[in-house]
Length: 235
Image 1 (cartoon, helix red, strand yellow):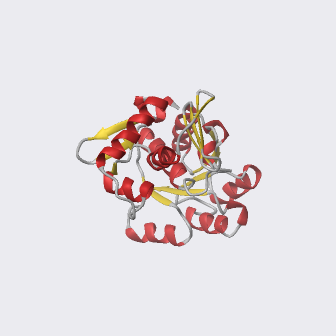
Image 2: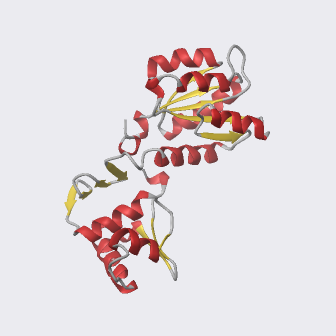
Image 3: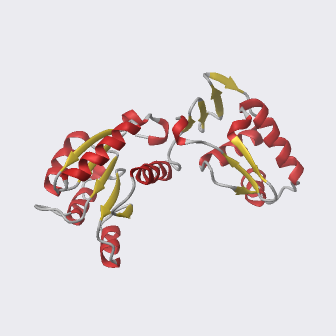
């Protein structure tokens, strides 16, 4: 499943922790965000639940009875069904050994407790974007859809025609929302090193994108470059 092209309501998150309070708080906040949330109190139970739902993201505690988070992660990575599943370790253990061991057995991220729900939500959103930007065929932000295979753009279900360079510029900026792309990077990725392009050319293409798609999606960083704006709360 290409997570970048599906709604949050179709993304399954499995929480694994032996502390009921933590499960309750995280379940409430992630459900409020729109995700499907499941839970388990130890590693063995987590494997059973995972076999039934095949989660997109698993958040694992390290210190748990029956089977700890490290062993659980190791077992999950041995199963081909979880090859694309994102695994985040959420633990109170902050020593380097725990971090290294987690990554050795296949964890994608390691986050220390305690963590504020809003911060965790942001990390989850970042992980979902990061692990799917190379394989996705569509980029969807609110009412804007960019079909990478067909080179098509739709806004509010209406098709928008973009010439090759405009599409390439939009694709680059939208690939990492809220990241500032310097002019040199834009030139290299959209026009290539063998083409002489001035700052004015980039400015003109940005102006055309603003006219066709909307000014709210683009921000000029004076003297640096441009970035694509997207607020998760507007999704």
